[in-house]
Image (cartoon, rainbow, N blue to C red):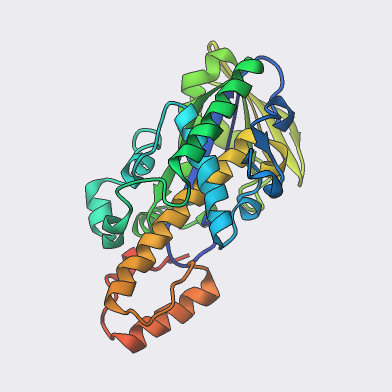
Length: 320
């Protein structure tokens, strides 16, 4: 397998804000892990002064200036290395596979997206990002590797609710978005041999049938299925993909961990825009990260401060 890919999501559980699905793919013959790029990448947050931190995004991002810089440096540097430089939030929204970026009608139903920043970076100095990129590119050359894809699908709450209505199942909705990213990368890189790692989707343990439907006229071989990991080999013509769905995938796979970081960065940008938009109407209301308990507090505070100020709740509050 010559291309190593992964994806992970951020924001599956909250009541407010988008679901974001980050992904990345590296080309390298042989294995690819953190030891492949030792001079540029680390999984230890304390190494952030001279290396990019790629691990579970909950460890990369902390709600302080250093955590914000650390997450932004990782996301923007790798996106640039993949040939998708992000200079404004609109570029980030457009980095998804075809058909997964929110269109004008969807964004119009979520007016806080108009508050997304016109210029990035927000937390890092451009000179620091340039140094990170130089080290990363040198380390990639040394390892005979390259970043061939990176991006994020941002699904606003209203679009997510519409999918919940269609599928009547939260897990099916999550798979509908994950599978489109998987299929896009399989079609682009399958002929080189694609090694794909995804975080487990809830409690689901069997994916063979779903993969067969996703890739018509394919052969799906079950290599193993357990509570911890489900592993398959998918072949279709000249394309082949070894794919595993595993718990804590972002601690086992560098591309999956990077997907987690890009997803988290996109979600944080959107939530900052969300809070900025509503703070303009109600300056005294504390911001929210959108998770259930605090989201309920925020909704109560908003209604108390300015009754009737909230827009159509189908575009604001998750139905599941």
